[in-house]
Length: 115
Image (cartoon, rainbow, N blue to C red):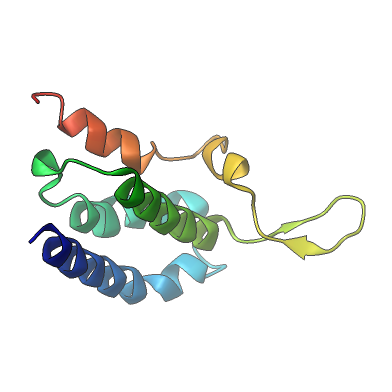
């Protein structure tokens, strides 16, 4: 039953992410506005019902991968200082950005404090 719930949840998350994928990739929108889109459009769908979740390590990893994918889309690639080549941001760079939103796993865990 839990697997069915996660399959449905993943499908909703994918649909939500793909519906805002173009604005998140746009160079016309500021990073602050993209983060607001993430907080208002994507996070509520991802976190729906999280008060009842008991996350396994696999599920935590899946959430982290999803969040990293969205954040990489928001922050875009970075140019290497020495070689000048474009590269993806490392995970540490995603979470140390000054305008970074809080970690998704921490949000789920803090909503489960009553357990």
